Image 1 (cartoon, rainbow, N blue to C red):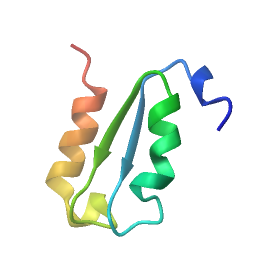
Image 2 (cartoon, rainbow, N blue to C red; image 1 turned 180 degrees about the vertical axis):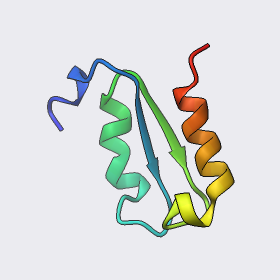
Image 3 (cartoon, rainbow, N blue to C red; image 1 turned 180 degrees about the horizontal axis):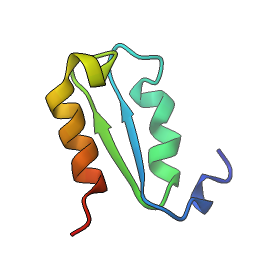
Amino acid sequence: IDRLHRIPCPTLVTNGPEEGAQDYVIASFIEKIPKVKWVGFAKSHIAFFEDRDYYFKAIGDFLRVD
């Protein structure tokens, strides 16, 4: 955790309400990684399966270079 600020590349952090990685767990990552994007999935534990459209849109948006 004390070296998260050293991550130089854009980083995508995701979580959902039914996971072990609750908002309070990932808060340090969101606060300390300089180029972070956080996407929360509202209704899933296995987002790529249960919320497929939103999941792949979020990944695509993150990877898209403008």
